[in-house]
Length: 87
Image (tube, rainbow, N blue to C red; front, side, top):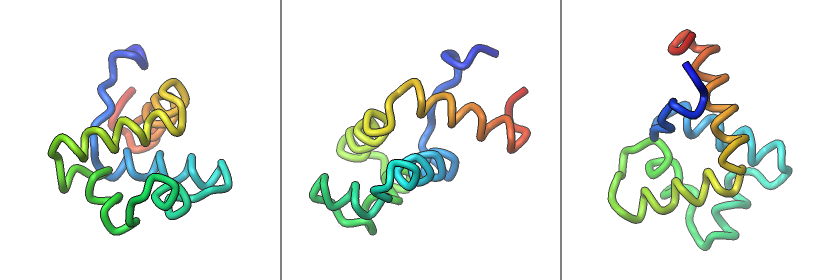
């Protein structure tokens, strides 16, 4: 399956990819949340889909853009493969 055909979905994998990427960038999720004027307590439910309204969808898109869509997708697909959820 081509990477581009995999839909990025909210959930624990989305959160882990974002958290790892922000850590690698040296900012961490707390730092990113602060830059965006958000509280970290609100960020994880948005990333995992616990909240899924228009604001949550917008924040998830910002999270993907902060990492870079191609990089985020590659990491997301790699995580799916490592979990045995994708071949």
